[in-house]
Length: 313
Picture 1 (tube, rainbow, N blue to C red):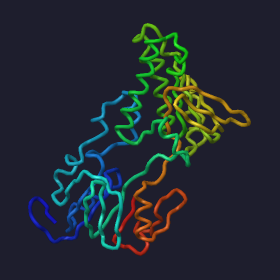
Picture 2: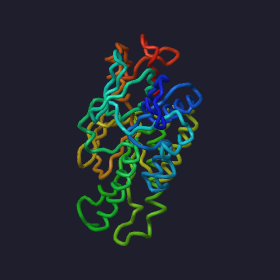
Picture 3: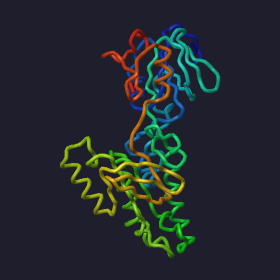
Picture 4: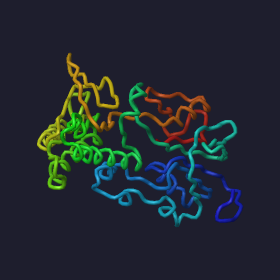
């Protein structure tokens, strides 16, 4: 392998993904007698917990995304590559990239992250926006602001109310933060900037299938979050499930009733699925998957029968 212009014979460790797991694994190898290749579809490390702030224009992208090469500039045993791994040949220890090239490895660390899960409704993806990448955040920002602009241009149009309606699906941390921030912007930031509409008329609906928002937290925290959301004007629909999403909005089942909500913006924060790369790896390695599509690993995070492959997230 060529590192810093010189050929080396040291073991080659390939790390897939520059999220928290991949970046920390790479840094942990900085003094190891190995050559590291870190490959990712983007050229930056993203601080995902604050991605909603970029989506709502609270932060600029550079505040939460730092170039990977800059982060690792002092680590001389690492090479950063921009690319997408689409398959793994565990028998020959070879990665196949989307551009047709191949990348060999001696040790593989898979930290490919997760993707959105629509629970089998793949057709919904065309009508909703997720929040996993900077591009996702920019798309949400454009969609939200376009709704206000189009409503301002035609305040008497039949779809004006829908243009000012945003449905957020899923009341985990991302959904709660997103719904609350959008409502806050509509009621406290945008008023006074438009002449023909009142942004405070914007409708923000948070749909949650369970009985609580932030269900993973203490019930007292859930109750507090619910009160604050409602004080901001968010309509919180608990014990409610999405039954359909189309170009004009969503259908929601709440008990025995089915409701239609026309909405210009639908944001999906209801769940995640394992990266498709996990299924490809499992098939090649003969490893089991759990119900969420994640590769089942040993206590040391290695794939059964493949001590040279680690799956960290």
